[in-house]
Amino acid sequence: MTPDNYIQVFTTTGKKEDAENIARTLIEKKVAGCVQIMGPVVSTYRWQGRIERSEEWLCFIKTREDLYDELEKEIKAIHPYETPEIIALPVAGGSEDYLTWLNGEVKKKT
Image 1 (cartoon, rainbow, N blue to C red):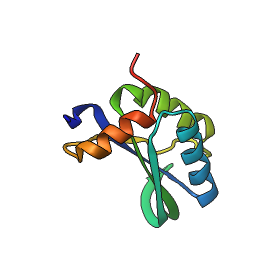
Image 2 (image 1 turned 180 degrees about the vertical axis):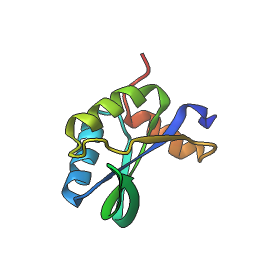
Image 3 (image 1 turned 135 degrees about the horizontal axis):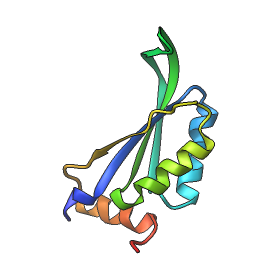
């Protein structure tokens, strides 16, 4: 199976409960097939002119590229950050069995 229409999206939250809520919502809405949560991780970044450091929970979200806009909208609707990190990367390769499973767990293409 060609992986060019699959993506992995990343977002971070300050609380594990927020990451779990995002994961559950994306799975329920069928805009993601799998969300893995890792953390805490330490993030260092500049925010409003100051260098910040915080512990965050990282969500690895697996989906199809055509669902990205809806997925981003869902994340923004429930994410507690003013400007949440939402970054998508293309999947360069993957197990045909896994990608077939993933495709079956998200909304059908329209």
